[in-house]
Image (cartoon, rainbow, N blue to C red; front, side, top):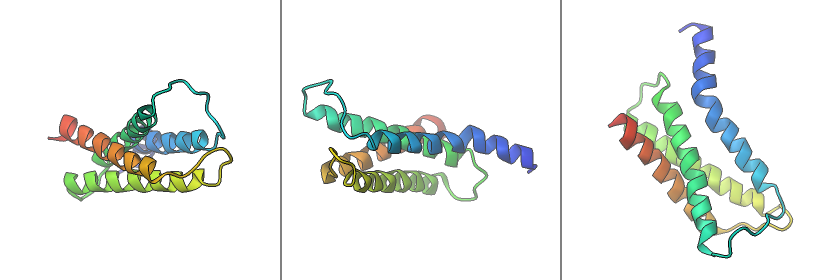
Length: 126
């Protein structure tokens, strides 16, 4: 594949999940958010949605790369990478004043990454 084609594939498929991961890191570095909702469950919904997007973007990138691994392995990689990023993000928040690390949030990050990756897999690859 030509160098230009590789760059085009990177910008189109790999840059979005990387940029999104950077956005998650930046948002996680903010000490305190304004309270928009009084519902306790809202935090869990945000975590699921946030990491579903990351899982979907990663699955999209893997599915559109010239990899010689099965789609199911690409699905597994997408979930694992997004879930580990969620775990590292919770660890990062431990050091941000006004934030805390939460095993519950990490679990919802993992659930969201699974949901987004499976959604992309089911919608576009099966």
